Length: 191
Image 1 (cartoon, one colour):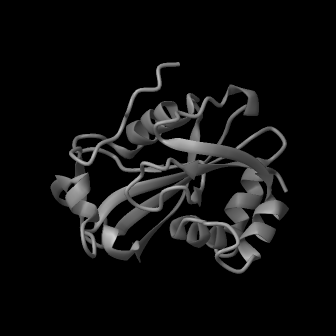
Image 2 (cartoon, helix red, strand yellow; image 1 turned 60 degrees about the vertical axis):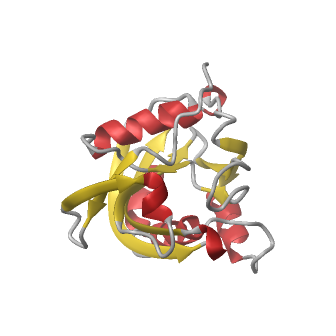
């Protein structure tokens, strides 16, 4: 697989209001400067045939939360790109896989990473399935990966910080998937 750089600070992201209506565009870099500007994003949780979740350690070169652990894939649709196209593009670019994705829920969050900037996103969360052996992480995006069963993820999230550097959106999304959205996750996993 060709592991080219697939993301840049210059790519145009979609600015949104709290109702997820597009209100303009701005470069990725500018969206993440200072306190951040609200923009559209997505997070994908990919499970294998044994219901293990693929988690990734973000590449060292990432501006925000480098070497932090996150869910399988998280990114942004680009201007002119719908969410279905963006999610499929990004899991292919980052992980070398294809998957049918199931939308679960949407939420807004804000998290600051010291003086380097912030995430301020309206994020749609998706679930999908892949075969573990098919995953080919792109080293320009991902430093490492792990496969964890649901109980292992629960235990990991319960550890006091900073036991492992875990991205804030991953903690928020997993908590929602295990509480408010638990029925969706349980139905998806067949448990």
